[in-house]
Length: 234
View 1 (cartoon, rainbow, N blue to C red):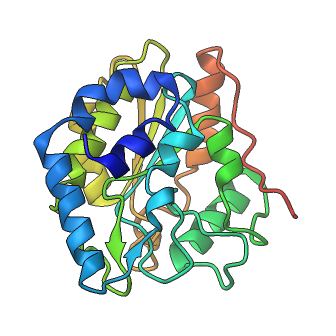
View 2 (cartoon, rainbow, N blue to C red; view 1 turned 135 degrees about the horizontal axis):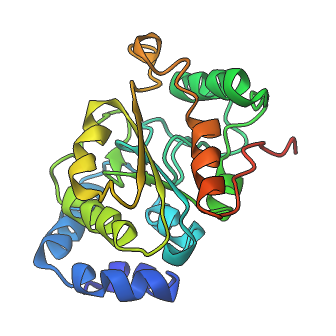
């Protein structure tokens, strides 16, 4: 295991360390880190900062996962991405359009108005794994780190959640996320699939899909604590 990834691995909850120990020692992850180091050395700005790259796993222990919201790759705008899918740092205004649409659906679904904030850490702390399938991006170049090695790692994360005894809700927005349904045991877990909240597709089935109330209904049926989706106002 490389030095930088090893340091980040050691910050994870023991439940993740046990599930992902083999993965962190795979050659592809070393190759990925070498690539990231070379890109940085070439003067490219890689987002989010390296210390935030595994925040999704740091913020939500494996044994605590109740809901997975799967994203694609981090926001490519400086100061936006911080390691949680769809989330932005508290000072970011205006919010990204996909996140605005998530808030619109939240208001329609549950009557919760979250438009004041895009910082979703409070969800993660309740058991919502906010996971991108790719955990880094070059500033200004969306999708630039796809197929560089992150996908097998995040597949292993999804498989680790799939192997948990407790039922979990997987929220899969858009075609890319829905490809991951093949990794999920649907006899145990619950998949909520719809169009992506992007402005390009939100009107094609995201609006009106009620993922937040449906997730809580499933959790309640399974005897698990529901998620309070409301974001703090300060």
